[in-house]
Length: 118
Image (cartoon, rainbow, N blue to C red):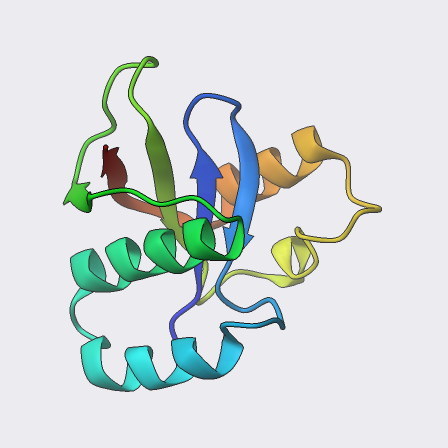
C-alpha cells in the first residue's frame, strides 16, 4: 500500500502519515485501491482527510509538483512507501520533530505539494 507523509509547510512539522492507524485507516485502504497510480489524487485526498480529522475544512485541495512560498497554506507530500525502518514511527510522540523531518527528507521521495484553497 502506498504510504504518504504530509509535512505542514508553515510549521515544517510532520502532520500526517497514511500508514498511521486511526479513524481514516480503512478509508485510506479503499482510496489507495482505487487511485494507486494517481499520486496527485492520493495526496489531495490524504490532505483532505487529515484536515477533516483536525476539524479543518478548505474549499479545494490543489496538488502541484513544486512547493509554494512559505506563506502558502498546505502540505509537502513525501512518498515513504519504500522507506527504511528509520521513518516507521515518525508519528510517535517520542520522536523528536526535527529527527522526523530529517528521516523523511533523507529516506523518502518528495512528490509534490498540496495547497489548501480557502
